[in-house]
Image (cartoon, rainbow, N blue to C red):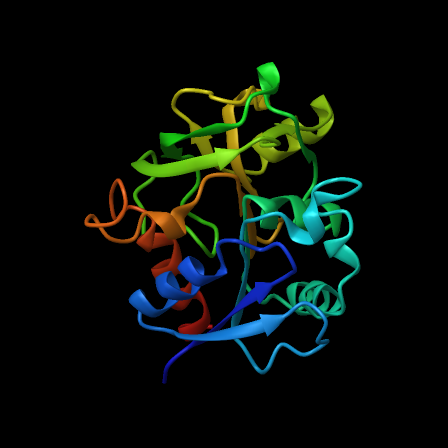
Length: 224
């Protein structure tokens, strides 16, 4: 059986094509999901990719959370479907209430575009089981509003429950406690600011380290 992974496209999405490619490289069937359709087309997992959904007007992800497809994503996530938000997708998941905290302007107010080293801080989420705890991943980061912030209580809760999934080895954007990615309480929803879909083949990216994220999700749905 081949798993089906949906990739959402909003107006302004940039990285849906690379996300589709990553899904296919991992051996799953990629299914294109359009923002205006309240239909997940029977997929087993969902990727909300990066870009500038609806032009990032108001706040990054603030309009996208109202898209018909996101109502379906929120409902499916509530039922345990694995959902991954990358960059703008992470912002959308926070705005939609699937993940806590927020993504704000980078420290120094500069757009950051470079390859970064990440630590796998938790390999128990649905999207990280293929990695060793503490493993180093080299993936691209490209964002202007990637600084993760939350209250001290929320940060303590995330750390105490093992829900900090990725940390920056070198903090490029001022994210609190070096947090690059987090998960929901059940570990099925993950958001991260760097781009694993751009690191799936050594020929076209800085590494193929990101592919394990997509393999992990397939494991999660095929063994459920």
